[in-house]
Image (cartoon, rainbow over all chains, first blue to last red; front, top):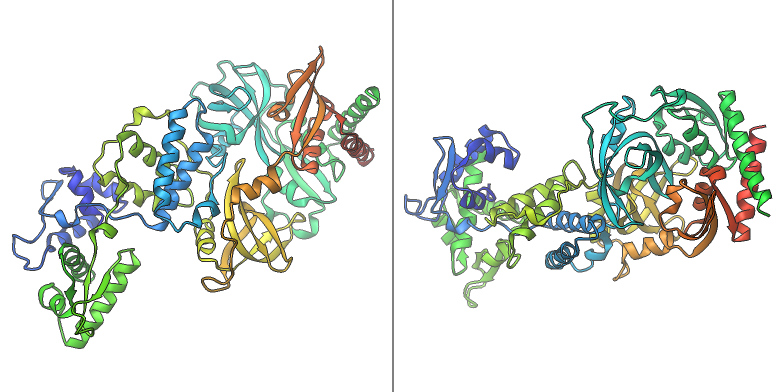
Length: 301
Length: 316
């Protein structure tokens, strides 16, 4: 309620519904709070000392509230939220905005003054703290939909907009990737999720949609794995619900994939600690792929 | 009833903020509306009200009014400690702070970020969003343990939690938390693992259920200048080694991030790739199958070959 007064002082005549939304409460609750405020003021409590509120017209104004008119100082969690938010913006901002980077640093140093000095370096948002937009991308996979993304390419140091058709997720070197068909480069390629700074579903379907072979038809197919070690990695990569996999049967896991190529690569990355049991033809292709890689090593000796 | 109490708290705040001198308890009871009943019940009300105000972060300053009468202390709230002072802010800075707060929507610090936003907007400075790139960033940490862990870190409280091991076992870990930080899309807790007598790093999304506090405030002494990002970089992400790898032309985007191309032919680009964790690097080489062939270091090359042989024999 204390925070209502300064907000009103700078937003005179705000519609009551908008004010309720801003504070995340119902209009009924807000009206009750406004009545309470109306009864308050400086000792004496005559019309001269009480705050004056008007809100019977559906629009709220306040006067005679100078004592409470400045917003309260920020508490620890509020300061932390702002600092981490700024650091995350800093880490993932378009590198061409040098001025932006400077402004962020100045604001962070101002805010750090509100915290216990030791906290500053103990809790930090580094690069890739912004949402990887996984949800938006994930929801496009089953429908073979497309997503418009803003992608921050580190090697070229630029942010570009492009339309992609996402197929699968993966994790390599502690980094999450999505495999997708990219309309900009008309090829299949991987995108780092932490470099996708924005994503929204693309309205048009099938406009320039990529040619899909039968293994990319949008239907998931089942795979059985035999897992020797690194169970956690398998569960995380294939996005399995741990609880649904009874402990006794964890040696043999059932997973699903949209694309054969992707599934083979995922399993190959475990280097023999995980084997693909069925389907048999996928098992054979995996072995052939490994043999092909081996022969490349022999050739280059 | 609740609103009577709120009224009294508001009136108390206003009076203590407006006064230029310290108000004694008897002055407060006489002039501020809402203190009723016996002397004893007024006293109790006042004690509870002070606690309530302090709990929401208001600093009540207490001082003996007259050195000769120390049993009659005075109270006031200094406007400087009460109100927000961020110095001069322009529209672009307010917009940037708003963006930083908005980034928490649906994430771990959503609530304090929104209340900070209300306070910022109350400053009455118009946001200049034109000065910013057109982005709607979202922070990617939604763990309910985020806020408790930041508190445990600042107050140096030992924590106990369940962690998913590499073999998917649920382990109980007792940790003195040093820091919390993010790199490459994941958040990590760094702390001293008591059972293992060593500093360990835990990925936040692998902590199961709620973190429990097992000690009191100050239950351990942390290094005074612990820098969590510097620690993560030096242990997990510092790229100390460099490999020479042939990557098929047009393939291997995940490997090309930091790669430097040293020569190229029709089929392959020969690249120098810095890497940090060897076993994770081997995973990504294997993931690329015959699209990525390691030349150097020889030791790395041998390991990849052995893994490929293991793959073949596991799929005979």
